[in-house]
Image 1 (cartoon, rainbow, N blue to C red):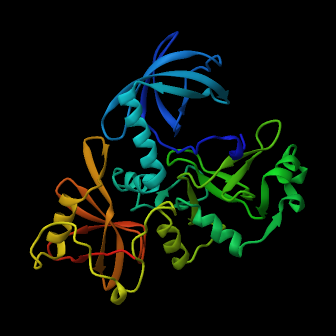
Image 2 (image 1 turned 30 degrees about the vertical axis):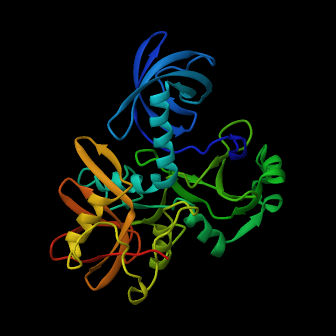
Image 3 (image 1 turned 90 degrees about the vertical axis):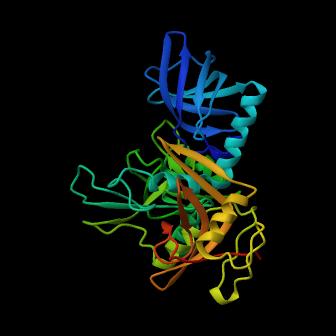
Length: 367
């Protein structure tokens, strides 16, 4: 389905759901979620119009009951549902979706940080597939699609009506009403971490944003990008497109919050303004102690559970730390009794830096 036909943006989130179907209860995982619905891959496709009850387990550890109506069915029994909740559960659901819109990209990166050892390196996915292509490295694309923005800045592209995809059935209609430019080189992406990698042709849309051209059906369609997918940036046995520079990867890492949110200060260390007064503490409270006091006094904290592991994210509490002589910046997190810096600015971003009593760290002010 073309992105222009969707009322609400969809987000790739896997949550446990128990569906009470006519043929019995089925446990499944959400594939995508939105304000008014979710999609699930079921053992068998459902007739459109089927109504059933469900229990969904949100990432904060709460569970909520609702009603779901099957609205569409795609290949592989991927079923899209519209949802209805009681008032209290609906508030929880809408709050969770709002969180996904604002900091979902951060949480997807944090999920990789909490993954078992060997399945992720920081926020960059490393995997060795069962092929002859060798080890592959995937990187986040940015909440606002900064990776694609960079590609269209420096890569070769064609206007929609001039693209080689005009030979694909249905693409002409897309080019006339929705597509501005088509990137000539395909890129390899994974829509979710455990999905197979796929080579796609990326387009820039007339209304802004990015999508890839799906050609598997009878006619070409557009699938939204910039919704949490990762992009192949390196392969041990072959050259890949794109080859991002370290500066470009840092630019992509910074593209994490929605652009309509207040942004923290990005600037040279000597130009950073004093930290805001986030807590009532003596002026000699600095370093890790100041970070912990700021976390305790923060007005906004987001929490998610990864198994039995509880991670707190403080989107409005940003800090600057020095590691190996380099200045690093980002929001702070808490992993049990450990204080962490989610590095979005600085060498090898994005990554997690554990803070200790010896860490050179200070809270940041805002513009």
